Length: 220
Figure 1: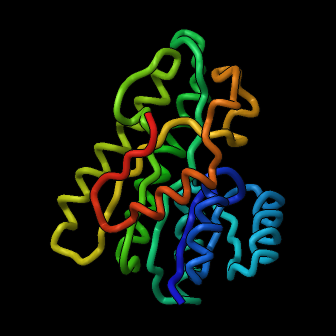
Figure 2: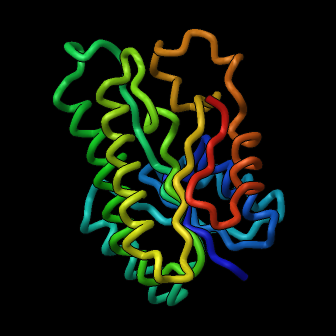
């Protein structure tokens, strides 16, 4: 059974990806920092007859990533998929951005993706999917710092695609527009969420296009 590790797996797109890949008879390892969300997600997935488990890890903390790696290496030796999905966002005019918000976005979105990939790429057999967002393709009003973090992940992903091109491992950048997820629950940046696609729709489209290509672009 193939093993898929998904960061930010407690809700939203992470949980939807777990469902879509789990239905392919893959074993899902959900990773996140909020245990009650992970427990709910795992219970829901198991009710759908999906093989899954969860492990706690704050990917902005390198020592926690090291512990996560040790646990997975000791139990499974390797994984087939690494899906770097975890991300945070704060939106508004640049002069309203706090240092805490800026640090958090770069710690999770950028440093977390880099550290997870750096640690796990040696034991990942088939795919690395970096979930980036269309904010990594073009700047948007009131998204300056968020877009900067996503542009950084785009640059990182394009670079490691070249660095590891000699391997059978495929590395894919995923760019998708906004979705109706808990990501927006504490933000007024998007007033009408009804126009957004559901996470499960986006997850299905990601999986349908997951053939080893370097980019998957969904929506605008």
